[in-house]
Image (cartoon, rainbow, N blue to C red):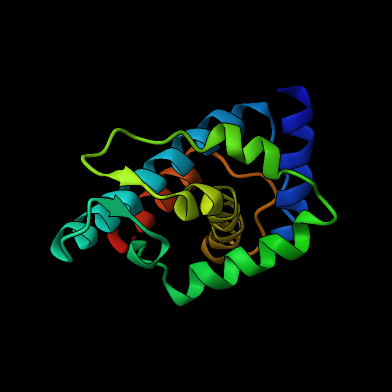
Length: 148
């Protein structure tokens, strides 16, 4: 995953001027998967409420901020190709309903949007931050737990 580390380092630098290292990659992986799982659980709930047995893109609760972060990721992805790595990182949790192809195809961009928003939240917590530490990760995880 050395190539992935370098690409994530560049992505964080471009998104928010942050430096991350190999130890941050595991936390990032856990963060992305926890947030994806939460979004897909809410999407599953909506699909069930609408009598469907497949989760579609319309079911995924995308906030305006996350949509903007996904757009920013698409623009940065041209400079920092990382979509393939995000496809491997975005592990799908077991759900009661099938996940539609449209949702599976959007997972790398959704994960990329989460990375962009995560980097920006670090900077909101501490505008002078250069390298997120454990206490920063814990604060960000608490914020996302409350809001997403």
